[in-house]
Image 1 (cartoon, one colour):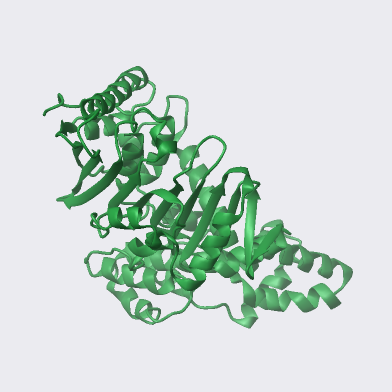
Image 2 (tube, one colour):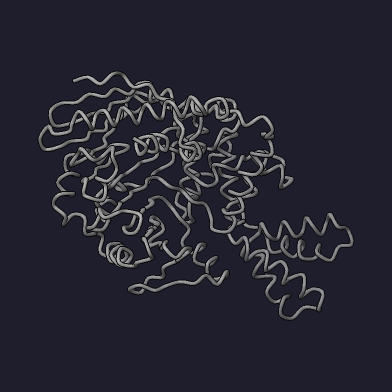
Length: 479
């Protein structure tokens, strides 16, 4: 039941699939002292002329502090073009000039994608301005091979033309489950529906902040962190996630594998880790980042990020995932019990999953009565219909299992009742679980829920799920 809540929470909202979605465009350009117009945004798309770069470098010698500061910022925004001009100064200039150039180069190294992010923000703003005059310049970007540029340009043109401005998403991510290791006893796939900037006003209207928290400061903090990361590693988009959990998972053993599908700037991430002298391990020629003794991560392509959490730091599942990423096929398909169970599910659904309840999982009382669990879903208007079904070969303990599921819902209800006054956002989960209906037959317990899409954006929901609260009212169990 807790897994069901997490899945639904991640599916709801429809916003914030890109890292840059958390950066409001108006405040971004205001902080850069740029007046917003079609002409100014169009000018941002053109690389700076050599003469302009030379002028900004000269401004670093100005006695006027504001002019010096402006020169620094413009050079940072210029990116590789300015970097190229600064290198000879850092090597052969006067002592003062070398120091200034070295400082600029260091700042550029710390935010190497700042110029690329500025370009994406300009494209996005042209779409938001909805002025037909911008279409011509946007059309020149549709065949760009720069990360995200073509997709942002296409969405901006659609927005100007008053058409649905959804971004193109990665195709085929539902098949990522077949990259997972053979040891998996449970798998889940989520396909996100995000694709537009966060509307903070709407979010905080629905989910008020605690009384003593300032809304503007909260927005600045979230946007600032997102921009800091984007400047360092480029934009990031997550379209879907596939999760596999090993059948032997317990407090001392087991592993979980996450495959994030979307778009990543692999070169920027690799450059950052090298600058920071990050320690890597090499497995079959692939560099593996190890941010924690039990966590491994690698990017096989610009469209996949693989994260493995392995109890006691065993590398076996990482070796399997490196091999799977290279061959395009993991071990899960060769496991008949799991492969057959997946075959009973519509893998094109927005959310789906399944579990073979082995001895490790059976230790959880809510699963003790069952052999398999499946999760399926279907779009229903603006919402999602969710079905969780737990089955057992034979009717032994089925009613006990149904009663335990109902008890879990009741516990969430009680928890929400205690927490709702301090955490107003739990009402959304309450609305979701009010529709929960539990039925059971001789061999299965079924939980159905009709989930309405929230008008708020999804970035708050992982926090909500972390709090573990949700108001629910299940209908009486029906046989």
